[in-house]
Length: 101
Length: 165
Image (cartoon, rainbow over all chains, first blue to last red; front, side, top):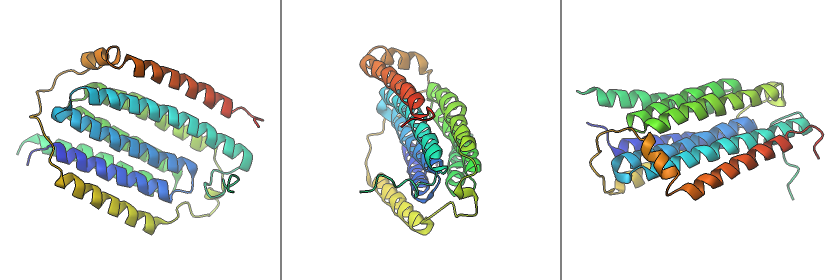
C-alpha cells in the first residue's frame, strides 16, 4: 500500500490527540507548552500534506507563518512562566489561580 | 515492496513515539528531549513529503530553538513543588478518554471525506517558490510576522524583568 494523503492526515490526528493529552494532564506549565507545540506541529503536518497532494506552495508558506507564531508564543509563554516562578516559586498550573473571580 | 512505506512509518513512528514520551514521561526535562525527538520525526516527514525548506526550518527553529528554550525554562524553574513528591500529572484517564474520542472522531471525519487529490507531482526544490510567494503574494503577512516577532521579543524581555509589577 503506497503512502497517500490519508496517512499524513492520520499522523496529524495522532499528534493532535497526543498534544491534547499533554495539555490536559500536565501540572507543570512547561509541560502544557509542550502539548501546545505538538498540536501546532500536527497542524503543520496537515498543511504540508495538502501542499504535496494538490495544494501548491501556498500551504507551505502558511506553515512557515505557523512556525513563526509558535516560536513567538513559546518565547512569551516562557517569559510568563519565569515571572510566575519568580512570584510563586512554582510552575504548577493549579497554583496559578490569583485571577479567579 | 518499495522502501517508501518503510521510510514513512519510520518517520511517523519517530514523531508519534517522541510525542507520546513527551506527554507521558514524569520528569519534565525528559519530556523536553522527547519533544526534540518528535520534532526531528516531523521534520523527516516534511522531507518525505517534498517540503525540503520546511524540513530545514523545522530543524533550525524547533529542534535548535524552541526545545533549547524550553530546556532553559526547565532549568531556570528547577526545584518546584512538582519535584517534591507531588504527582506531576492529573486527570490522566479522563485525558486519554478525551484524546481517544478526539482521535476516533478525526479519523472518522478523515476517512469519510472525499478530497480532490491531485497526483503527487515530482518533487522539486521549494525554496525559490516559497521565497517568491513570501516577497510577492504574502508580503503584507510577511511584514506583519516580522512586527509580531519584534513585539514578542520586546514583550518577553519586559516580562522577565526582575521586580516587574
